[in-house]
Image (cartoon, rainbow, N blue to C red; front, side, top):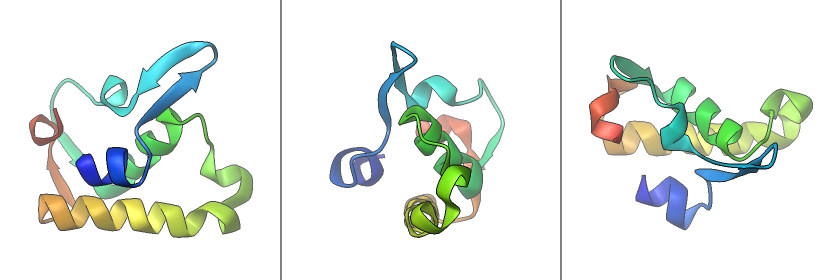
Length: 82
């Protein structure tokens, strides 16, 4: 998470007046995909990438790529992200 949270500046913000971090959105157990994780990063920053897909697509691709690079696959057990 260091790359996406610290280096790229994703992982959380204040959403609807409440602090929110991507770890708040992780499920208790199970598998997490790169696409899910990238979506949760956007949600934790209070952004809906579908509002302007052309603007956000490169960011989604970059975040998804970071997940695959660090996890070694398209999906991993959520415990690896906690």
